[in-house]
Amino acid sequence: MRPSLGKSCLAVLRSIAGLTQGELAELVGTSRPTIQAVELGKLALSRGLADRVSLHTGVSRSWLLDNKYNVQPTCQRDAHEYTKRIFEMTRAEIDDPRTDPVDRLVQFKTLGSVYWRLGAMLLEAYRANKTIYFHHKLRLFLEDVEIEFPRAKDLPVSDDPKRTAVDLRKLLKEASEAKLTGLKAEG
Image (cartoon, rainbow, N blue to C red; front, side, top):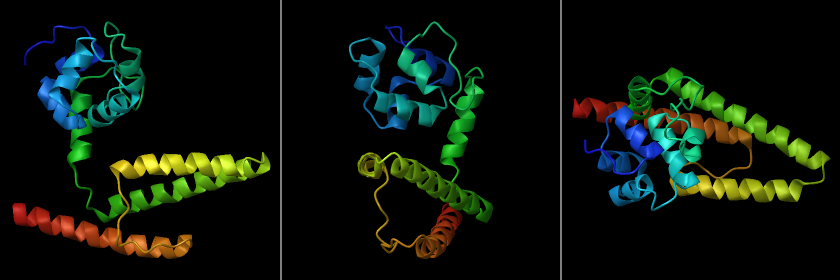
C-alpha cells in the first residue's frame, strides 16, 4: 500500500484497515481519483461519501467529517478506538448474506420499530400542526433512500400495514431461500 502524500482522515483510515486508495474507492462506490483528491485536500469530504465510508468500514462519521487526522479514530457504533478488528468485523457483517430465519425476524422487527417511530413522529407533527412539513421531510428522506435501495417490484402496493407485513414476510423467506440455493451452488 502506497502512503498518501496528504494528511487526512481517509489516509489514516486506510492505514489502519490496510486498504489501498483503489480498494477503499471500490468499497464505497467511488473512484480512486476521488479518494486521492480528498486525501490531498483538493476535494472536501462530502457528507454522503463520509456516510458510505463509515457504513462500509465502521469508522465514526463525525471523526471523518471533523478531519482531525491526528486524533485517534473512533468506532461508529460506540466511542471505542477504531482498529483493524473493527474494520474486519464490519466487513464480515456486510458480506454475510443473513439467510437465517432469526436474522429475518430481527430485520422484520426492525421494520416494526421503524413503523412505530414514524407513527410517534407523525403524532407529534400532528399535535404541532406540522403534518404537511412532516410528510415533505419523509418524502425527501424516502426518495434519498430509494436511490440506493429501489423498491422491490414484487411487493404489492398497499396502505394496509398488516397486508404489507404478510406479503413482506413471504417475500423475505423466498429471498432467503434463493440466497441459500445460490450459496450452495457456489460452494
